[in-house]
Image (cartoon, rainbow, N blue to C red; front, side, top):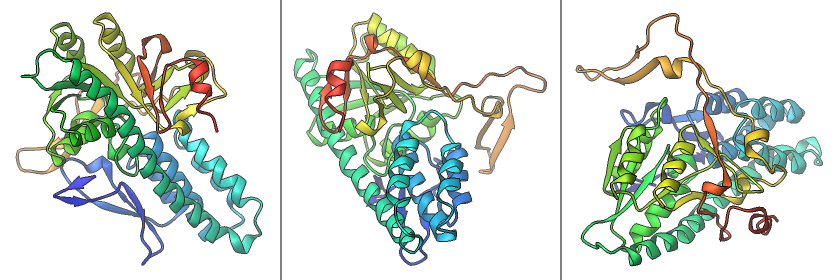
Length: 360
């Protein structure tokens, strides 16, 4: 990603210290701080507290967590696997990365485990960058076609997003925002409607920050404004990411995605999901019944963080005491509402026949 004109990643290995560096996303957009992970506990905390978030980035962080665990004790493979797996139940990339690491390292003698774990994590880091760039290229062709077909060329191509599926949700490039970045590189004038994405405001805090750094036109909107904009012809397409997608094309993403898909369907607006093949759970056929939906701490809803008039970052209560609060982190958008699924391999229809062709 671009940051003050220089290139940054969301996670990388620090060869001098042997630790792992991440961007602490809980402090953005008010403060940019690099945080070091030096232990398995650090990696677990970074995932569970959402210092890192986004399915692809969670997977790579988990792989580095295994490396850090092997540095502490190469006999801790099974316990490290379980500790990391428990941090976020919905994102399938977490289990995918852990299974990949476990199957490789478990067959090795103890003295070889540390180097193998590090090599795998670094490999997965670089693979994620290439995968996300390919997602962007494939998706940009869809946006290019929409731009060619757009009657009013005096207005930009208006893309609506939900949550953050940019470089901060991956190692670099992103998934949904990679489509936007590559479209802009092709010379397509893109304007992005950014859902604020309550309760953690990843759209307001992260997506807007990324787009500003890339100097891409964007407008922040409240979550419930998307349908209104669609009704008035101000949205040309929606592009979202995914934390888990089923074989039949059901897409699990940040809570509120389903409502945007319903509005897009009602207004005949394309609704795309951009995701790596590793986010597809080929073992599941019914997202509503089979995907575990994470329910997060109620304080994400009852409290909000921001900078006050004196420039101090504060966390305040906005609901008062004794409130019954439900905080589901994700919802499932049925395949019938998905116009296409954009992956690094191909753009496919949201059905089992085409998705099954992506399996390794």
